[in-house]
Each structure stands twice: as C-alpha cells, then as structure tokens.
Amino acid sequence: MASLTTLPPEILSLICDGLTLRQILKIRLISRSHDEKFRDSMRREVFERLRVEFTSSNVKRLAELGEEVGGYVRHITFVGEGKVKTRAVVKLLGGLSGLKEVDLGGLGAGVNVVIKALHVSETLESVVYNSSAGIMDLTFPSTLGNLKKLEMGLKIPYTHASRPFEKKLWGWIASLPLTELKLVNTAEISCDPDQTTWPVRRHGGYLPKHFSPLSHLKKIILGGIYLTLRDMKLLIPSPGDMEKVEFGGCQMVDPRVEWVGVIEYLDGIDVKLGLAGYFRGIAGYELPDLVTHPDGDCEVTLQSPDGEYKFFKNVRLAVKNSGDTGFWESLTDGKYDSPRVVRWKRLRMLGDRYDLEMKKLGGFAVYDYEAAGRLERKFLRDVEMLEDGGF
Image (tube, rainbow, N blue to C red; front, side):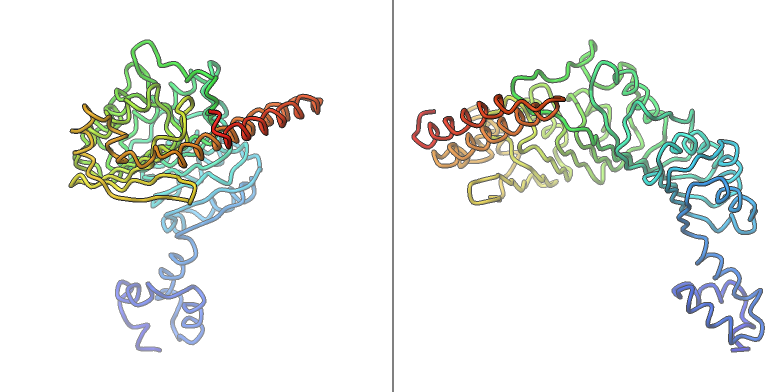
C-alpha cells in the first residue's frame, strides 16, 4: 500500500475513479500516507453530486467550505420548503466554480430565490425544474450566458391572466444559448369538443411576435404546449441540425391540417409525435401516434378495441397521396374506419364526455346528486343507442 501512495496524484485519481466512497475510505485506513494522496478522490466522490435541504444553516455551511471544496461540486439538487435569503444563495453559487447543473424540482417557495441567484454562476450549463408550480409563480434571471440545457415542467393554464407570463417565459428561453430544451405543461388541457381552442395572437402564432429563433437547438421535447406551424419553424429553424424532436399532446388550431405541415417541414429527421386522443372536436381519436425516421419510414400506433395496433408506413408516400384520399386516411390505409372500430371510438368519446361532465359537478361546493343522476341516465341511453347502431 505504501507503493500506491508514491504515485502522482493524477495517476492515483485515475485508479480511484471507479471506486465508491466506502472503498476509498478502506484504502485510506490501511495507507501510511493518505491525507494528500486520497484527498482529491474522496472530495470528488463526496461533493460531485449534492442533495441539499434548503435551509439557511445548510446553505451557509456549504458556502463556508470555500473554493477548496466548492470546486468539486458539479451537480446540486435543492429540496424542501425552507426560506433562505437571496444573498446567501448568491454567496453559495458564486463559490461553486465547477458547477454544471442545478435541479430545483424539490423546492417549494424557495425556487424563485435560487432562480434569481443563478446568474452568478459562470459555469452553469443545465437547469432542471419539474414541479406542479404555475407559470405565474416564477421569476426568471436576466441572463444565463452559458446555459445549454433547460428542462422545465410547470402549469401553463392558457388563460388571459397567464398570457403575459407565457410571453416572459418564451422571451427568457429565446435569450438563452440552449442546445437542449424540454418544456412540459403539467396543467390539464380540456379536450371538451364544446370548448374553443385557445386563440392565437394577432400575428398568427402562440409564441411572442418578436420571438428569436432557437438557432443553437439540437434537442427539443415539448408536452401540452400550444403551437402553430409558424411557431414550429421558430423553435426549429434548421431541422437538419436536430438530434431529437418530440412533441406530446401539443395543441394546434386545426390539428388535422397543421400536423401534416409539421411532418413535411421536419421530413428527413427522427421525430416522435404523440397525437392520439389529445384534440377536442376530432371525432373518434383519429390522429395516431407517429415516430418518423430520416428515410421516410413511419411507425404508426393506433388505439383499437384490442389495444394498441402498430404498423409501418412511408410518410412521404402518405403526403404524396393526400390529394386523393387525405393524409391520415392514406397513412392508416383506412383500417381505422371499420364499423367495429368506429363504434368503439364513439364509445370512448361518450365515456370521456361523461367523465368530463362529472368532474365539473365535483367542482361545486354542494354536490348535485340529481344532476349526476341525469348525466348517468343519459350516458346509459347513449351507450344503448350506440350498441343498437342508432348513431
């Protein structure tokens, strides 16, 4: 063991790189000269990834460790409901010279305190924030010049009150040199066919009028976000440069038409589109889930009475044939229009409509049992008519 400690620190670091903290401690105990030789490996193992309970005392103690230890921290996760002053977080983050990623998903009200302090980190490349918080609860730092990856899950209700906050969020995103963006709306989007879709802005898109294209972007994942084809071209100005494109439950004004435009625009790259069952006013869940590939091959996933039904088509041929039979009909070969499947789809719609109306009743202070009974009787009558071929 004495010979091991005679090695240069760089070589020793390579040897100890794959060891756990417990293993390194054992080596230290039987080593004659361990303090200097094993300090680097130990500190990297202990401090590289930290999970910190967000309290004033914890933040203060970590900041007091200084640059000698702070330089080892690469990832830090904050959790808890504690209250900490902004200047304390600024002092902490300013001393973490090697910090690459901050995860805020476990924070409560303190999230804005940390967000306001992020700008002091000159090395920060990734921010992760997956929460049930709403867009109106957040503030955003003026600049994060090195940020390459942003992952956020938050409630975007798409109401008139939230619209200024949407504009602020997208303006902030456009100011970042992102190569990876994941934005998921955790608010429930109603698919009630009687409700109109959220209106586009006057300039013809949901993104702000002067939104700057995300020219550095390589990977994008969006869920539950309102988009137009114009917005898509701003988010992905150079489709050929993209490594990953994924949209799930994203809303469009005329999805049957606009998603075809998106598929044409993104031709030649790998794209995953989750479309099934997300759109109000489209009878029978006609839009399938798609995974397209650069050569035009497309994996189509349809829901059926017997579960998922998957097959492969060439999306380019489907676009080419759309003048005669329609894109979606061409893509599915009409298999989604058999009497049995149509009946099943209509039954699905009846069930969803019933669940939606019952949920509305549950939102009142006093539950209306009489109204609930009427809804149930109507649902059973509609199901009976459907089974008898009445509609």
